Length: 81
Image (cartoon, rainbow, N blue to C red; front, side, top):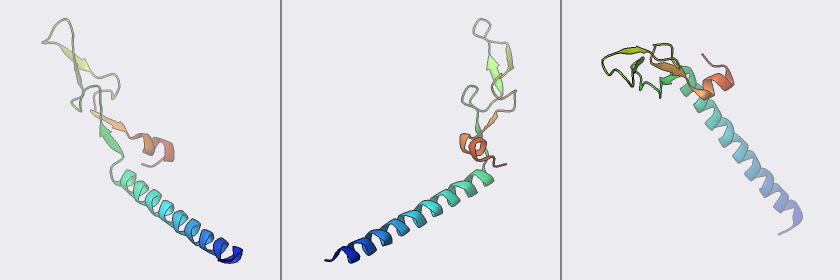
């Protein structure tokens, strides 16, 4: 195998890898566009935080401001909404 065919094979594999990476990033961006929010981990999507001292009292979750949803990290990073 000559050096030229080895370089051609390497170029082919790198091109395929680049196309695969681009396809996966495009699919991830579509996923972020369709579902930009996730359930808040702190309140488990309820929007309420129970008091530790008095179990019958609750307030709004400070992380999600009572909505129960938070913007996904990828949506913040890529500015997708």
